[in-house]
Image: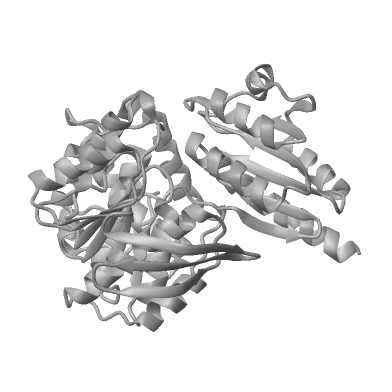
Length: 461
């Protein structure tokens, strides 16, 4: 028997039509959501527009900022959220994928929605998904379902002042691209998802630039000349004010500290000296700079009031899991979601500059649709030992395939990665370190396992 669930989120529209929730538990809802993975990635906006029309256009009832790019989206969202929070605002975020818990994809002030809220939201979307399945458009993908849930949730939550939306894939045809934001951000451009977005920087930039809206300011840290040209041309077509790193805003006096970075930022209007962030890596200063510039715009346009102190404190407090995250100092264990060539390049740079005196053991897993030959070649150069692991995910590549590509003198393929990590952290010497990296889907599974094992080690001492 179907249980009727009367949620605080369900609109009178649904009750009039006699549409009720189909799931009684969070676990059932999550199983249904993840079951949508079978539909794969489905670029396009028609299904989202159809669902939003049925829901009363919730995407038009909120203030938003849209963040796209290849790497750095999540970090930029975090910096901007933290700044806005320090300024006294309630901030919604939509991010992907999750690292520690599925619910974190839809969060308010960094706090994920509850299991009950996920259940309620799923029961609202299920009838729409079923109805959509019977149309020429076909049923919505997992990402489209979650995006629709987020739009409905934030539109119904009157306490949320602004929502930061992270693009899932590309931009132009991404399901988040039905919003009309106050500002847009493109972090950088790399050769990722080339089977979908194109095999050149320019083609990928074209897709990323699809989030630029008419007369809406765009902030970017893109470096590749061809990619920059494409984005600039799109901004001009849309009469969108265009602000770019090393042209309209500048980072200087950067230095790395033990637990983060310090830098100064200059724009055409302000200069902020000795800013500090807790996230590690020079690339994080660029993500922080983008967040600062967006915040300054929101303040100068009288959309939000954001003080310099809010910027400074917000940056310092900004935390995003799985990005060169130190889980333990003794033994030294780091996780980093470096899932493409650009991410691996950054990881290797940080390892070589910060830990040149350590023996480095890298554990790596990736998805099979990635171009991992260059990634492995760079990891080979950085690692004294490298282990490739299998993990349970539909698109996961095989460890044996990595092993064939690697030129490392000390390499192996691992099937039972959980047992392997538990054993390895027991043997990390004082002059060594363990780095777990690769797919964010793998990182999300590995982090809680590592944390549990490290906690047990501490208790047993």
